[in-house]
Length: 346
Ligand code: OKP
Ligand code: ZN
Image (cartoon, rainbow, N blue to C red):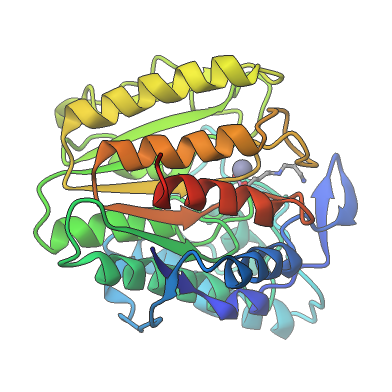
């Protein structure tokens, strides 16, 4: 098991986020990645691989240049206006409003390039997210030449799967899994599958590849009728144009039993297998656990182990990228269960 750790995740240390119109303690805190890293170090499960800088070009294959330019300078703009602490958007160009002109006003830009006010823009958000993408790319490098059963785990935060071509949201700024999937294609792969196991639907990843046949996106998640991100992730989203049939959403009601979750996992894996990708990227959210503070599935050690074992059974090169998982005291054990199942399938 190859492991790449983005230690610069800690540059993004939000204090607060909005929840139901009030500022509450931030959920995506550095402590959760520190716990994951600590668990890994005591596990003997993997070999750390170097974090290499691949520059901006692979990010530009997924995100718009204007968005990346905005993200890099956003906090400095906020400070120049006298802003302190985290910046939060407050106005958005919804239906009937224009997206084709970037406002000169910072609040206008912040709304243009975001999907919610639940994502604190900190001084270090860009640094953490940029190096998260570099970590995912480094994980991909580690897999090169290692053959079919090889796997790599990328430890980073903030998560990435809600970030779209030109917007942040859902704690995400750069879509690390999408950057890695696109880089694999650019490196010569014909087909890449992305399996999103986070509690929340990966709207950013889905949208990035929705009209393409070279990326299969399969996701198990809380039903958007009641769960964030609310506006994408329904079962009738099957892809469009050349991508028709290359998108599979398996929304599950909040409170879904572990048995039903595992049935959905089996369907997702069958879909991945049938697609015969050259690489599987897993958006590994651990916020599906029973003890997660903001989610409503009930997975435990047995189910996390089953995830690892079933991934191993696919026999595909597998790049796991960390997404959510907010039960700070428990996430380490959940991660080790997945990676243990993957390393020791029987
Ligand atoms: C990110 B990932 C709390 C409201 C919910 C969005 C949750 C983002 C989850 N302020 N905020 O998919 O784990
Ligand atoms: Zn999540």
